[in-house]
Length: 536
Image 1: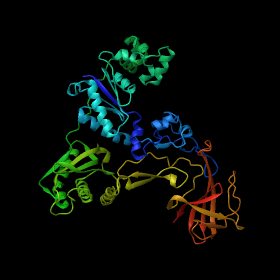
Image 2: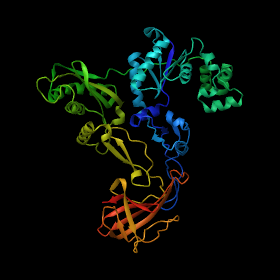
Image 3: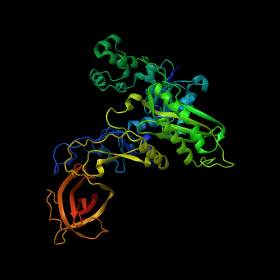
Image 4: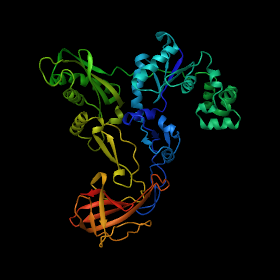
């Protein structure tokens, strides 16, 4: 059997588009791309190197962004200069993997034994006889993925994995490029040596005058091993159309799903929740026997043999049997489809089966109880998980602190149950940051405010960070009355992204206390005052 490679170009963009408007120009930045040299000129509040937004490089971009000139490897500011409406998203590998899992499952429904290479790329042995031929099998897989919503899918078919991948990268959208049997080496011959994906080796080969795969393949195997080592010898075999590592099927985990069948069907929630407890305990025990815990589970409930309710639940730690029973109860209580489970009565279809399907499993050793200090209260986790079930996955978030200058920039919110996003270092120097304590209330949007001097003149800050006059009266919100200023501190001026005229920002922050004892964090920009936060 020959090898079929399925390639979904720009997969990080495809995974991110689920939460973005259709047709948006999108660029995904490399993880950790927010780190860089001084995001601000040192104008108070400290000095040194700071982490800066805007220095990341583009990992992938949408067709709309490419049409505006955005390319992979561009710096963020260059990409935004090409496309002012560009939507920039930080890369999250776990989102890519979770989204690609749906593709793998869809392909496995047609042909078991998929080998995921990375999110957006997988390989399998071609089930040609079952579908009437190699091209026909590829067409069926492409049609299935397009129906799933993966509109840009390309397939390549060849004798070796390397040749099939290169064929997929040269195929048209929703099409398959077939390399005839025995022609892998001739197909690869005219390709540039860059397809070997080894910058150091490619640079050396070009300096030796070897510019194509055929040039490299023509070298003697012993000479390549002596000059370039084992890795070079492996790439040499790939260039010759040999397959040193045949495609291995994705390891099928032990049968970890669990199901309970009700005969006769049950119509109310409490008997169902009581009946699934033993199955839930067996489900957790079976995972523990293979050294795993479940942090993401899909619950399915059948009515008349058809899945009538399906939902994926996440847990910030791992699911116990009690957690699973609670999720079954909450899911059925919130369901509004046929049967209206939770209310008894004639005409209501009953539940005839409930299944637990592990979607995210992790090693048990990574979730062991700490030696010192308690773990999060189970009751809190249960309440939060139930609220999330009612509001949706993004409805409940966990907040972490990160580095930044403004109070809003120091917050990062992650949906409850997910691992936290990479955050900017809190300990790194942040020139212009306001010193502690941090304000207790940060407004979602800054509120328009006013600060004037003793003669009613507007208070401002010049380019050198000097205050035009001492603040005498303040109005923290345009809807509030004026009041005298009791004390104030500042300014903390910041010149952000001064290198880019389109996104540069020059602001100065003040701490202002009114005579009533209320303290605010205020910012002035271009003569306009805003209230960012309040100290409670």
